[in-house]
Structure formats: structure tokens, C-alpha cells
Length: 445
Image 1 (cartoon, rainbow, N blue to C red):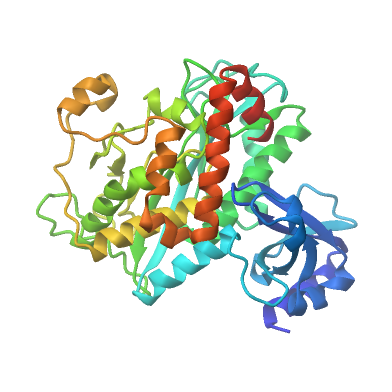
Image 2 (image 1 turned 90 degrees about the vertical axis):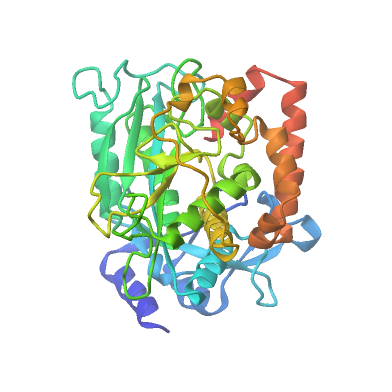
């Protein structure tokens, strides 16, 4: 037994923990879980815990359904919203087949593989997402709790206690929060997590999303990460700040002698060029629902054209300028992903695109600084030579299906599953437009 596993066993005994939940996600990023008795943990660490994968989206068919969940002891945390007596803890798991090989449909292992590839090149991939969501009266509709706006801290912001309880619970699980606030939409909120390595952050995002929903439920309301739940109001994004560090902790994106004055290294510029080059191909991963493209089409801080610039929130990739002389603060921000994406696959796709940009020596187009892209029509932007992201789920499927980079990154199993599942969803949507969309997404997101 490793020191981390031994720590888990001792903590379980000292904290009166009677249930340990094994967490993992399906291909689409839906959290899955089953509870294990503490007496079974020692065996689970060495041999895994068996479960039926045929009932989980993308995990197999009935005749090939036996799978094993191996808990990662480093992810052990006690759930703070559960009672302290007969307490409940959780660990994230890796999924394997009975013969011991990694299951190709496990999203967490896809990210582990990409992170290992980056490590072999001397890079640590750090990410820091800004996650947005809405609160509604219940799960059956979109009645909001307030009419507040951006940064409101008045009686308009009835979600202050919800945010407070969420932040406290998230931080009690060892996840640092940078800040939280009311967003632009009525009853819309944002909580930003402190950047860390990509695998830890993907686990943190899944934890955070569950905490948001649990806290909302305890207050008798419903939290939704649906990308565009309200017509005429902003959608909910997951702006992802990202950078590459060396193994020694040096930010490889920072170069104070940058001729452009952006303090970006050549490596950072090629990384951004990779994001721009491959964004249409990974859009199905970062924006995986029909509803995702309602958010992108609406503008309002949801950029849909391949563009970049410093401080310009209408571009797809933005270079934040809060602390321009700080090496640790230097990063790039991809603004197209939405909060309903599977973070394991989304971070994998971004990293793969950035590394491809570096390996292929891609060059950046001219930045867009003085133009608000949201103020211009699609026709005008295209006439200026700007290429859009896919305009709908159907186009995203086509670009993704033809992408060799996405096939290599996610593996043939997940790549084909997403093509098949999303094609079915797109066909279903076209047959039942309008109410089908709200009924389908609001319940699960």
C-alpha cells in the first residue's frame, strides 16, 4: 500500500467515514458514482471494484460490460456538505478492463495521456477556468431568482448566500477559489478557480459543478450549466486561461522582450496559433450540444471567429493584461468553451491543439485590438477574412469527424462515439426543434 493509500485508510478510521464514493465521468462529462464500504477499500486499491459499464453512456454494450474502477488516493476528500458522523468521502477513479488494460472510453485517462505527452516535452500544462451558471426556481423552467447584473451586490443579487456556501464547500475540499460574483445575466453567477495543473483542475471542475448543484438543492433552487438557457441574455461559458510551465516552475509563455509588446514568447505565439488553427476541429468537444451554438451565435462575450488580441474580449483568444510585468500571470484565455463541456476532453483538445501549433511552427495572424467583433455582422467579419467556428452542431460534427488530430488525441473509441452520439442528437433536434431543446438540456445541465 502506498503512503497516500495508507493516509486514506487512517483518515477514514479517524473521521468516522462510512461511505466512500468512487467518482468518474462518462464520455459526455456526466458524473457517475457508486459507494464503497471502507472494508472494501484495500482490495479496491490493488484490484479495483467491478461494475456494469453497459448502463453508462459510451462505456460499452451488455455483452462486454464488466469494468473495474481503480480509486486514485491522491484525490481523496471528505464531502463537507454531508453529515460529520457516518461521513462520506470521495475519490476519482481510473477505469480499466478486466484484463487490466486502460478503458479507451475513460475521459480522465485521455487527459492523463496528454499531460504525460506534454511532460515528455518538458511542459507542465496549467489551466484556470472561469465557470458560469444560472440559478432557477426549479428544474422544470427558467424562472430566475433575481434581476441583478454584472458585479451587483445589492438586494438584486439573491444568490450571494448561494455563492458563499458554494465557495466555502469548494475550498473545504482543497480547491482554491480566486473570486466569485454576479454575472451579466439575471440570476447568473461566476466562480473562478485558482490555476493548477490540468488533471487536478479537471477533477476540481467536476467537483465544483457538483457542489454548485448540491448547494442550490439545499437552498431549494436549481443550478444549471446549460450554455444558453435564456433567450436575450448571455450564455454560460467556461473561459479557460492556460499556459505552459517548465518542470522547474518557469512560465514558458512569458518573454518581456517580445517585439509585439505583449510579453509573449515565440512558444506562446505558436501555441495560440495552434488553438486558432484547430478550434473548428475541437469545437464539438468544447461546445458539445445543440444549445452550445445558440450561445456562440448570440455574441455577448461568446466569440465565434478565429481571432486573437490583447484585452479584447470579442476575440476567440485573449491575452489578459492585468499584471503585464508578472511572469506567473502571463497566460492566454480561450473564450469559446462552455460550462457544459467535459473538462477532461476539453483540456486534452486544447493542449493537443497548442502542442500541434508549436510542433508545426504555426505563425499567428495579425491581432485584433481596436475592433469589437460583436458589433459586426457575420457577412462583414467574413469579408474581412475572419473564419468562424462551426455555426451549429451539425457543422461541428463534420469538422470533428474529419480531424486526425482529434482522433489521435481522444483515441478512436471516444472519437467515433462522439460522432455517433452527436449525430443522433443533431438528427433528433432537427425533427423536434424548440421545446425539445429546453426539456433535454435543462434537466441534465
